[in-house]
Length: 165
Image (tube, rainbow, N blue to C red):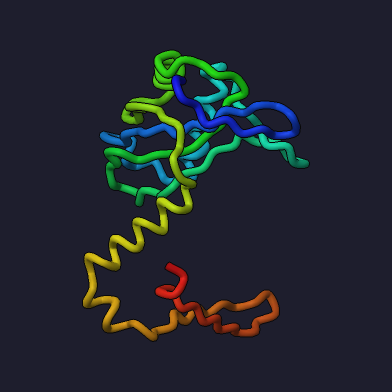
């Protein structure tokens, strides 16, 4: 990549990359968790120098900003990953696209400007701005979540979603 975002992990440079992809056709029926596994397998098939986490159970570092609901197509979705070596964009694109199934195509890659979590919060803020009457009607509303513990005790949790965004 031309201007990669470099992170140093335990003295080793790691290149942070954001991939933008399309999910269309029959691939729209791939659930979010299956898409996650599909992307992981495609990294292994592409033989890219992918970076693995350093924990007890090492796995591919892969972060999706927003999940796509089952049955919907995605036009400009993104996920972040890390490489151990700096490779040209064209090589990363060609190797990954060759390993991905039909209907999932990576259109471009770039260095991430912000964290994936910030993109998620921005999407929620945008939705709340577009639906201002929704926010006015539930400004002080607390979402009640009822859970049953393994001991049969009902627990109610209060979450004020609007204050979190």
